Length: 322
Image 1 (cartoon, one colour):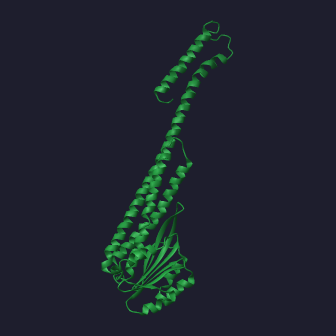
Image 2 (cartoon, helix red, strand yellow):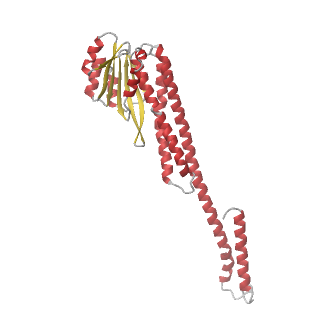
Image 3 (tube, one colour):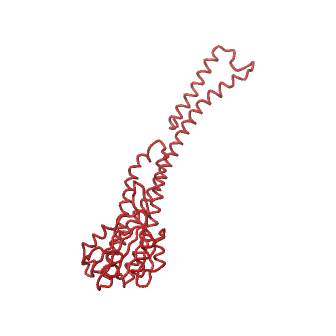
């Protein structure tokens, strides 16, 4: 459950890994802060962290239950954030969430569900000790930037999959699986947009507010994350429009193909109806039928039927019904 628990000096240099029980001892030292990473912790561990960092009861309750909406809340001199995460697992889009506690001397990330480890974000931050000297808020920037950047490849994969589906979309035969996949993609993108869109408000607050936790030196970095979130949101919106257009085009082509089949069937039915109408007159068993006693009547009737059917065929071909 404890992925990482690392202590840093105020100058941004790493002191080393510590245990949860040692957090209070480290915080007693001046000019230190702690970064803790958890993955689906139990209630006992969260209560231990609450004791170490004096976290609010409501924030701890949210972090334990998970399934929270994206939000940012202020508790005294600390912030509590819930951020939705997304990850491709075996070709399927899975969602999770990360709960973040930010204080003057601590950063705690709690991951639930589908989410990549934040170890790469931690290493990136540690390679810039001059920025880590700004405190835990730089670690918060690293985590948020990592979350947002991992969403761009997801949108790119959807775009590539849509490109691969174009052959099936414009095929002459209808494939139910194609429409099903397009619908699934649109549903996943809608869920992804619901996760990304509220994140813009959170980053906007971090850019403008909370001066006690976000120093002015780091605000340009949070603006950069905001630009990335905006880009992801715009990409998702564009992809949703493309998917809607693809579904409509596919259904329109299917409808067009069905209309073409119906036109051909109607054309052949009209050609069969003409000789049926003519010959049916001679099945009424009247004694005095027209030309019934003439030797040339039967050949004349055959010529008439062939002429009518041939004329209909030529007209339907010219009208592109056959």
